[in-house]
Image (cartoon, rainbow, N blue to C red; front, side, top):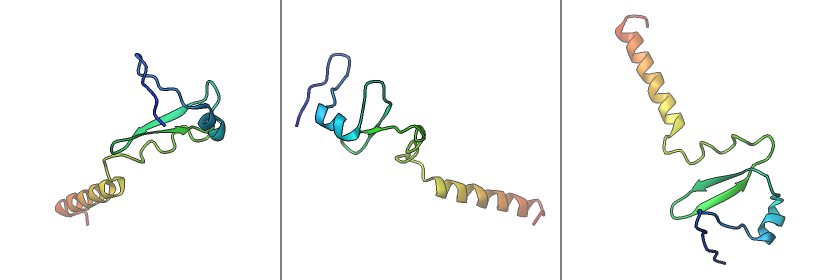
Length: 81
């Protein structure tokens, strides 16, 4: 199924998809870019921030571990450990 992008960059979500997902006028959706695709997700009332970091280019766990190692190394240099 293909659709044209309008002059303002708008795309109409087909009615059958809106109905299946329960998307109503005024509902919030998130738009995420993937590798060659765009995904639209309906935002629920308690999900306004859910998924905002899902496709982050930063590995958050690795970043936290790196920061923790740096803190330990700094403490060791200062003789606090």
